[in-house]
Image 1: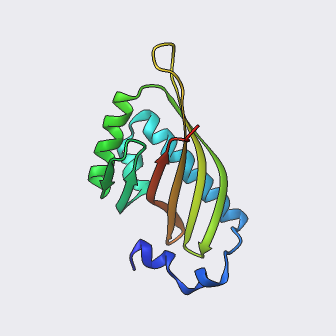
Image 2: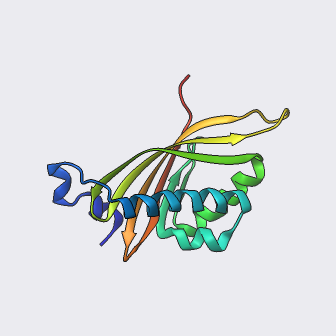
Length: 144
């Protein structure tokens, strides 16, 4: 079943589910692992936490489709935008038992030459077996 078929499950019509304590911890850990993988350019960790069909829309408007293109773009972006990356999860919404939306504040803390970039990130995460993986990422620059 594809990631968007998960999201279109009929349970979506009847409201959202509660995120269990265990799933909430796993989802927060997943986002933390993503941040660490980006910070350290750890391709093995990235590969283990992204779905093969992951897609990413970055703040520049570039779409990255599939794990290879996404990972290549992430490495390129990390090299071109140096700084410490921080993700702070603000909200997690479970659409059904295997699909959630995670909203986070995303900052790339720069130095005097590269000012701090403040953005929002939304992650679409799906549960595969007992593990949560990232299936979609949307990075947005605030209008103000």
